[in-house]
Length: 398
Image (tube, rainbow, N blue to C red; front, side, top):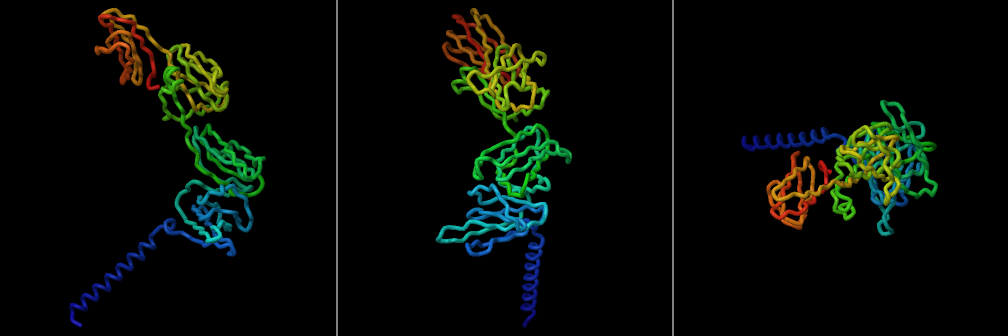
């Protein structure tokens, strides 16, 4: 064997060693949550798969045809997992053994597949193992959040903790209409809290479809006619107002004297009062065409809408009916200025030509004036003038 062949063979062996070392090292250095995955084949006559969940680890559990029942450390437990659910996330505070009784396919296949994978973070939908001897932590919530739940098959306590201390708890009872009665319920949070669950009697699996969310404030604005004809403006870019007793908020909604605010409150209309100056507070009145949890307030002055809570309440809808208008009887070349602000939208119309900020506008046409900065809008009569009608569609963006 000549020297060239020997050198080539040595290079080849070294290359193979480096490749093997690289692949082996990369496998060793891969985090366990990225590679830890287990798969079980489900058959009707086979024993139910058993899996040992490590403490404080997060797993996803997937069943090809859904879940039938569960046993935890040899004890059968109930669950409210919907029949159509195929996948959920779960975690245990202690090392826990779970037996899975899963559905299989039709009479043709009569098999199924159960897959369990370790992951890094809690996802939804989620299943929580709720025990009677201690609270199980769920998540942290902030003021203004809402949490939707389905009724469980067993009763439990929902505890609200702050700085590690129990501040409030609610008993959520098993529904009286049977174990398959799924009816939604929700919790509103008026402070920053940590939410935990504790079973009232026996342990069970509790299915949670989604995490808490910030409820949006539905906003509509315009003239009454615009809103009734579904031509009003709509926004929902702000959070709903979650108010504690005595709390006062100054909103971004400007009202001229005579304007109306229709305020939606989930609790009851008499749980808050309204003002535009922060001095004179008035009780709103029930809306004459809506349910009693919607009330109207008419501004007696001019200013930003303020709301003061008498009791805990949630304001999740505000409709602003703008009623401010002007009738300008301008003679030829006479002018009138109207103070406007950034975000205002005004309409104008006349039976004759007229001028706005030096621009001539045609007769019998409705014009929209969108204001981008605080200033004065100047109207001037033409050579053959007629009354100019001006009215407000929105103030300061609403």
